[in-house]
Figure 1 (tube, rainbow, N blue to C red):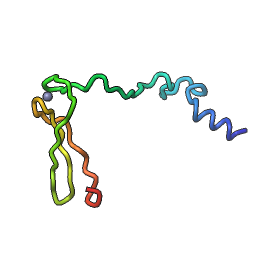
Figure 2: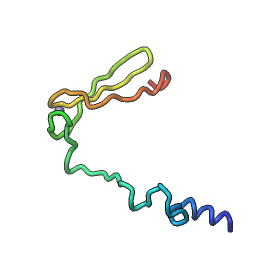
Figure 3: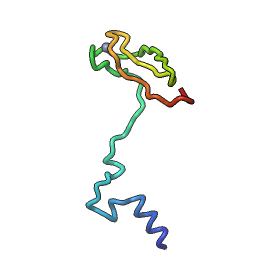
Figure 4: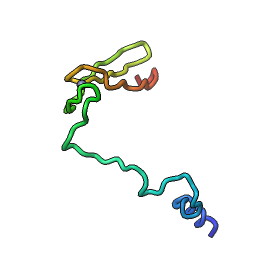
Length: 86
Ligand SMILES: [Zn+2]
């Protein structure tokens, strides 16, 4: 019985603690996949249907730099995965 109550508290914390800071499931922002419209470059404001990539090599492994094909401004860098995974 105590175990079931614990599961219920973990699943619906706001029902048991109404002043909890945890958001309800329907209050959270949902991520949706969609492909009709592409993302917009934050610099030149053109739609991105592709992204250019350059490999960066170092003794610690490979990283990637992503940039806009229209204005060539940098959109992001890949994170270093470490020596063995690089
Ligand atoms: Zn751009």
